[in-house]
Amino acid sequence: MVGGYGAFGKHVAQRLALRPGLEIIIAGRSAARAATFADQLARSAKAKISHTILDATKPRAPRSLRRARVSAGVEGQTQPMVLSRASD
Image 1 (cartoon, rainbow, N blue to C red):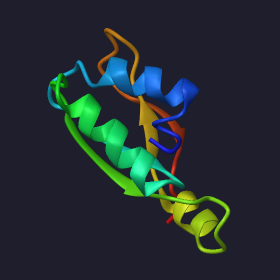
Image 2 (spheres, rainbow, N blue to C red; image 1 turned 90 degrees about the horizontal axis):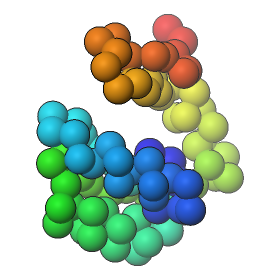
Image 3 (cartoon, helix red, strand yellow; image 1 turned 180 degrees about the vertical axis):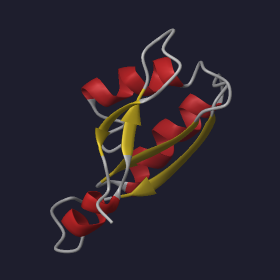
Image 4 (cartoon, rainbow, N blue to C red; image 1 turned 90 degrees about the vertical axis):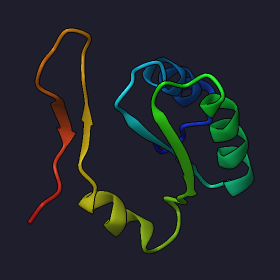
């Protein structure tokens, strides 16, 4: 989750962390903030929690973000909703 420790991302991450079987990677420009929140979240999470640094303002970041496949699910939905699909 890019911005996973920010005001909105934090709430989304906390809800998703309650779901077993998910893997959540908290990402943002600050490695320290991502690590702190991921550690805090992992204490009560049923999902697997990790963290990384990702700065979308860096020259290489937009390319790596375009390659990412981002999907989200809705409670009760059996298939993920694809928000952005990586191009071949």
